[in-house]
Amino acid sequence: MIVKPARLLLAMTAMVVLPSFAQNVATVNGKPIPAAKVDQVVKQVVAQGKATDSPQLREAIKRDLIGREVLIQEADKQGIGTRPEVKNQIENARQSIIINAMLADYIKKHPVTDAEIKAEYDKFKGQVGDKEYHARHILVGTEDEAKAIIAKLKGGAKFEDLAKQSKDPGSAQNGGDLDWASPANFVPEFSKAMTSLGKGQITETPVKTQFGYHVIKLEDTRAAKIPPLEEVKQQVGEQLQQRKLAAFREELMKKAKIQ
Image 1: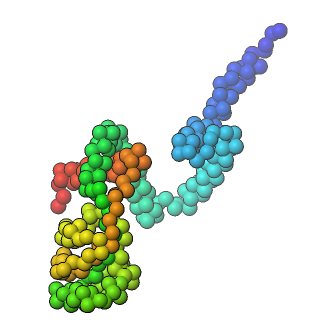
Image 2: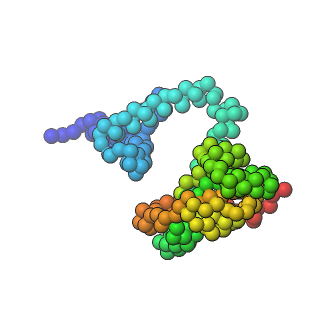
Image 3: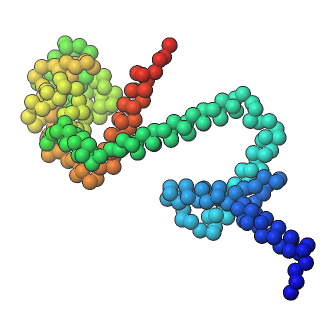
């Protein structure tokens, strides 16, 4: 069979053009939407665990990209992107994207190690101690007020009733109840007085802190419930990661010339 030159040229042209069309999933008013863009979005969605790669997912992403292209073309026609307030939002978004990418890169280069997580966990255990305390308190503004409350308690008044006059709104309406907590959760003066009490005892003298004067009653103690490292490893790692990023930002701020 002899192929005429015109047909040969047409066949060769088709061989060149068809692969080009295959690279795009659609065109919108002449603007192509590359298949690579669909692949990119699919990869992001799958990486985030939101879906698995499938023809249905790809079709949905394709429709979304087409819709976005239609809208952006119309917005460009209307000059929306040239408005000052829109330009500012675009610039803010650009900065956020670049900054987040830089911080992610920093974390990749300075990852939180298992040794750092273990050290932080051990530090936490040391701060918490081996006991938890269930205490109540009444907070007042002056030492004389606190002494008067102690005298009333010694006279038989109920702690829960007197707690209603406490300046601590979080516990006043609950009989001064602070629930179970580690001594590390309180300021040192409060913790020292609380841990020196026996079950059911009340402080003999007012306890002064930065918040005022406290009258403290210890309801009970129990062994501290500290979750094993395996349960909190991710949480501890994230906290350390945030600290590293904060230190990185602070270092850059110190180096910057700010006027």
